[in-house]
Length: 103
Image (cartoon, rainbow, N blue to C red; front, top):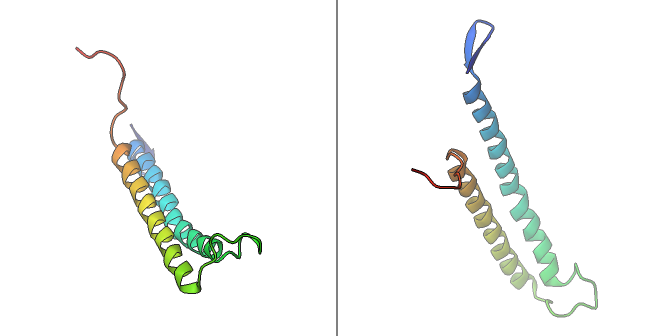
């Protein structure tokens, strides 16, 4: 499907694909930046015990231990976001599967 715009032919399927791809890429870029950083600081506070209050005693760790485990949580978050991006990118171009018998 094409349309005219100021003397140029524009393929609307291609432009809608690019705008959809741009939104997906922007979403995963923001997710890649904010999720690991947010989880790092939240889990660091949680492991130090400062997030749960003074009565919470099961995760009181030293600073170096809390940095280490918070970094592990952040790295796992990066891997989850990358796996989700690959899954979405892999399935975006494929036609929908129809259920039923094919002859």
